[in-house]
Amino acid sequence: MNRISRGVFTLVASTAFAAACFAPISRAQTSSTTSSTTKEQWIHVRVESTDDKGETVRVNVPVEMAEKVLPAINKDKLHNGKVHIDSAHMDDVDLRSLLDAVRTSKDGEYVTVQSRENDVRVAKNNGYLYVYVTEKPRTVVKTETGKSNSAKVSKVEVKVPLKVVDALFSAGKDELDIVAALHALSANGDTELVNVKDSENTVRVWIDSKNVAD
Amino acid sequence: MLIIAKIALGFGATLAVGGAYVFHEGVINVDVDELRPGGSHVHVWVPATAVSLGMRVVPRRHLEHAASQVQPFLPVLREVAKELKRFPDAKFVEVKDSTDHVFIGTTDGKIRIDVVNNNETVHLRIPIDTVEDVADRLESDAPTI
Image (cartoon, rainbow over all chains, first blue to last red):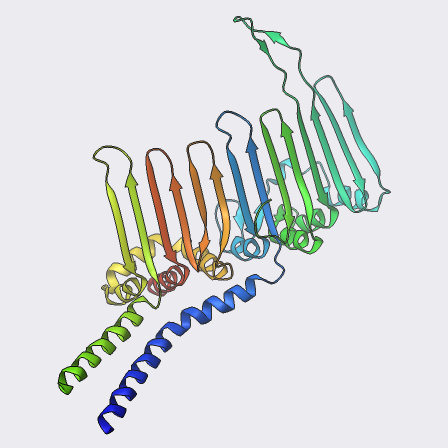
């Protein structure tokens, strides 16, 4: 009886030790699964091509992850989550005053450019800055083979919350604060940021709380 | 008879405990198949513990050299690993067309990279803990300025 109980004890002890060794994995997985279920904002990029290969690119990045990783990258003009911009191009423009003017102005369409090639519209509405560019179809030209070179129409729609623009320029004069912009973007909630459509490609950039693209 | 049973039990228990320890950090898996006649086929399964242990037994001077080479990237690597642990099952990048498929993401707490096309298939699985461990170890061995 004593021998049997010693055998059982050895078996139980071994099993317990083995379980203890495995425990960190299961604990880590449980905790990480729990944390990932909290409302995370994700930036999604989707590129779909309608050519023969039918290429699709999907990129999903958690905003918080980008906020944490970007400051760790110090390369070229990116340092501590901020991009240094060449002030030589900005000397003649007081960007802050310009942004301040846009922010305090009433909603409306600020810029409208219409030409034979493009239509460009810049507008402000409900705290968002909108940029619309429509490239008009060019004249159809017959090639040497007799085939017509079909015109390509492309549409670009950009929608940026003004808070994000403010955050982007919140650093020094010659810097763009990417991390602050991401933070503002995340706080802004679900938004469609960029939509580009032409005859061959569709590009979408948006932010939401889903961890996968549609 | 009882002695044999005891030896078997001890052996079994040691095997179980040893196995549990060796695999408790998961397994690094590398599969590369070149889909052409005579193409190479590499299939490697390494317990992640072997890497962690290996990092501890490798002579410090060798690690210092490796650490100095990758030093600029270590903060990024450590931060990425730390953040990836929060997303054990996620799809970060996926590229698909009629012939190619590339996937970068995480599955069951492992970094997963898959490349499949007509010429080759590559499947890579690395436990996120291992990446963090390696980054920490290299950082501690990196020469200070």
